Amino acid sequence: MIATMHVPFVDLRAQHAPISRDIDQAIRAVVDRGDFILGAAVERFEAEFAAFIGTRHAIGVGTGFDAIELALRAFGVGPGDEVVTAANTFIATVMAILAVGARPVLADMDPVTYAIDPAALAAAITPRTRAVIPVHLFGQPVDLEAVVSVARRHNLVVIEDAAQAHGARYNGRRAGSFGHAAAFSFYPSKNLGALGDGGMITTDDERAAAALRLLRNYGQRAKYHHAVPGTNSRLDTLQAAVLSVKLPHLDGWNAARREHADAYAARLGGRVRTPVAAAGREHIYHLYVIETEARDALQQRLRARQVDTGIHYPVPVHLQEACVSLGYKAGDFPATEAAAARMLSLPMFAELSDEQIEYVSGAIDSIP
Ligand SMILES: Cc1ncc(COP(=O)(O)O)c(C=O)c1O
Image 1: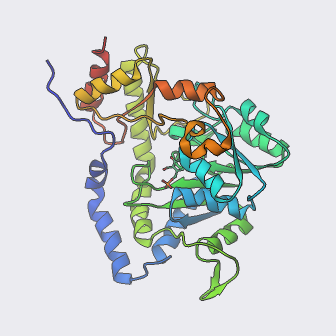
Image 2 (image 1 turned 90 degrees about the vertical axis):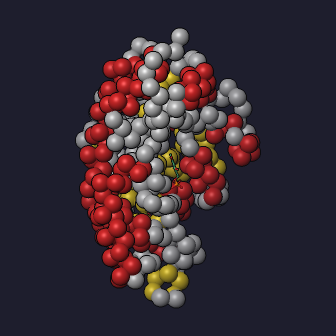
Image 3 (image 1 turned 45 degrees about the vertical axis):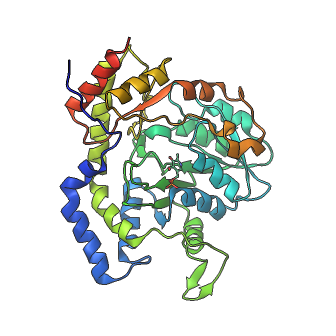
C-alpha cells in the first residue's frame, strides 16, 4: 500500500519560492518610486512582453476579459455585429463579446486538439460577421493558418484569445502574433500569472494600439483631456513589476510542463485518452486534460487519494443559464458536449515532481 500524498492542482508557492527575493525587490522598487498607476514598470513590461510575443505593441489592461473586450472595441466591433468563437471556451470569451453589444456565434471544436474547427468556423459566418476569436484552449494554438485564411476570405478581424497560451508557438511563431490583436490573461494560475488580476493586448496595428492606450484610461490623451469615452482598465503597476521578474522564466516553465506531459502520456497512454499536440503546434499545457468514460468516478477516486483535479469546463457555454438568449440547445455542438462529459484536468505546473506524476498515474492505473 503506497502512502498517500497530496498533489495540488497547481502550486504557486513552489513557483514563487525560488524567485521570491526578486519579486520582493521588484515590489519594493515600485513602492520606493511611488509611480503606482501606469508607471515605469508597466511601460517596461509592455516592451518586454511585445518583444517576447513578437508584436510591435503590447498594452497592459486590468484582466484578460478586458483585453478581449477592449480589443473588440478598438477594432470597431459593436452592436449589430456577429463574432464567431469556440463553443468550448471559458465563458469570458463570450461575455466579452456580449459586453461590446455584439452577438456571439459559436462553432464546434476539432475533437482531437480541442481547437475551433475551421470548417465549422467557416459555416458560422454570415453577412453580419465582423470578427472571429479563436481560443488557444489548454495551451495549444489553434490551426492559425486555416483560421486566418478563412478570416481573410471574409474580411474579418481576428482577435486571438491567448489567455491560456503564453509562449506557445505555431510553426515557430508565438501565438498572439497572428491575429489583428491577441488577448492575454495574467490570472495567477496562468502559465504567466500575476499576484492578482492582469491582462495584455498584443498587436502590430499602430492605430489600434493608440486607441487601446486611450480606451483603458478614460480616453485620456493628456491629463484631464479626454478624447473618447473609455474605461478604467490599467495593468496594475505592482503586477507589471512582478510579471517582469517572471517573464524570463516562462520558456523554462513551459518546457518543464511539456516534459511532465510526456511523462504522464508515457504512463497513461492506452488507459485514458491523453492530449494530442498537432504537428507544428507547440502545446504549453496550461491544462493537462485527459478523457475517459468514467470521468466522475475517476475524479472521486483521485480525490480520495488526495489528488486535486479540475473539469474545464463541465457545462459548455451554449448550455449555460447566462447564455440562454443566444438560442442554442443541447445537441448543437456534439464534439464540445461529448468532451465536456469526459474531460478531466490533472495536476500540471512546472514544479510538479516525478514522484507526484508517478503517484497520480499510479492512482489512475489502480482504477478498475
Ligand atoms: C480562454 C480564456 N479567455 C479569457 C479569460 C479571462 O481572463 P481573466 O480571468 O483574466 O479575465 C480566461 C481566464 O480566466 C481564459 O481562460
